[in-house]
Image (cartoon, rainbow, N blue to C red):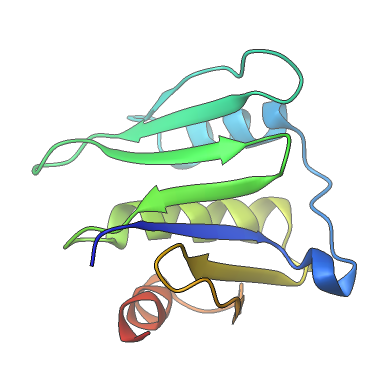
Length: 126
């Protein structure tokens, strides 16, 4: 299957991310200085983060109006999954967070204290 993964605060349980688009852009630059980060257009715009890699760029999108982080399913999920996990560990470590795949649509809890390998295993085991 080919699709995208979505990560968001668990709004069904009343959780919300309190960080701003500027916070996310700044943290991305600190975590991945090699990333290209586009500023959102407008208060509810989308930030695109491009992560250079040997197989081409990985893309992580942040839709600030929703708010949700999105990355595409591909053979090697480590770079985008690592960035998403590390951003949330830094910006929203105590926020109840979920992820789901658009081809499945079932929300799964995301343990922000997990390792990148555990997160990738969780994504690919569903």
